[in-house]
Image (tube, rainbow, N blue to C red):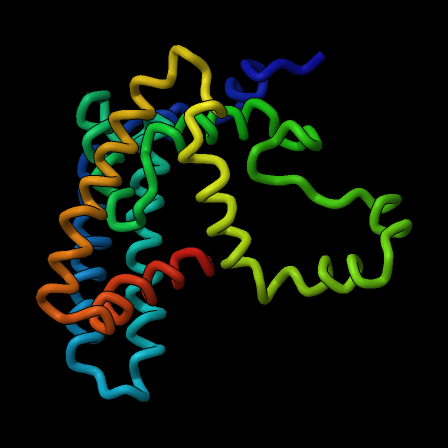
Length: 213
């Protein structure tokens, strides 16, 4: 009969305190790392580009972590600031903040509940044992294709209004509008400045690096 409150009461109060300095320091670190990554991509010879992409992909993963903390309401005491920072942090990833926040709340509410969890649906042993050889091979090969599955999850769970409750739809629409505006303005601007290959080089490859993580 252990309740969530019982568990929370065992934790030191410090873990529930919001540290504004630490929060904004994480923003500074991620932005600086991302800027350095873009500089490395611009200056690196072709054979060092994979390292520059790995660095930059890791840096934008920092943006995701910031948005994650905003969604958990652990970034700032000001909830409007959290919504703005979370939305901006997710934009380079073309991730709509509010849809992700709603789905992530359900993930935590349904954690370890097979089928209901939006993020973690492992294959039960009995299902694996009864699977054809080809499906077993696909399951074993999950590691190398994980980034593509992450992209599929991004598309499947965050852009379909029918997956959200009526009370959530308006906020979802605002987030989607922000993402589409970023794509409509940011992508053409990148292509105008550095061409389609530059878009691949400066945006797509780091984005794929994020999905690897």
